[in-house]
Image 1 (cartoon, rainbow, N blue to C red):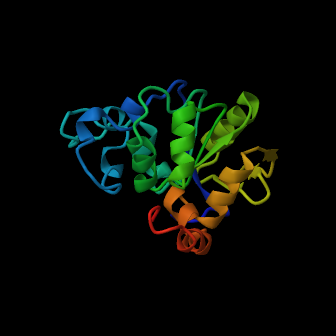
Image 2: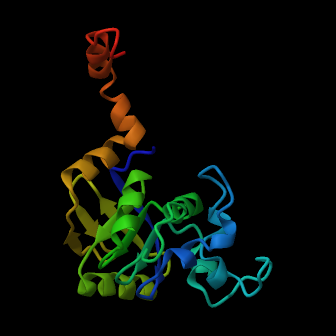
Length: 201
């Protein structure tokens, strides 16, 4: 898993509350067995005017030239609600997003994001709206997300603090998913197994 320490990137907005996982990655695209390849289907029903994905919707923010290459997504409360599919953070990360900023997240989506190296940042509704206003007013506006300092810096230089569980912060800073965290204790595990009687091995 790619470590996250700080990231400065172009920001894009989806100015909607309750963005659910079926909008993030619709169910018809869940047949892949690997984590890659989902980005092309991200927000499919909003990004395209047709079912096949041949006709982009020019009104949708991710299709606008000014937001091309955006790596930070700003949205409203309860982002990632709905079904618990892990494909949602897979699709966001595969598209190129490193962080999602919103006033609140659905619990399962929040955990899935952290486990897949995507940083969910909770700010107040007022702070999120300020970020949206600054991004809207300034083409090419970038936001700095610093996990080490637990801060978000707006395009104008305003600094907002956020919190995250210590274990989640540690794993993200060190690029550790569940498997990586287990492997970090490889020596201790091997030592314990070496002491087991044969009938327990």
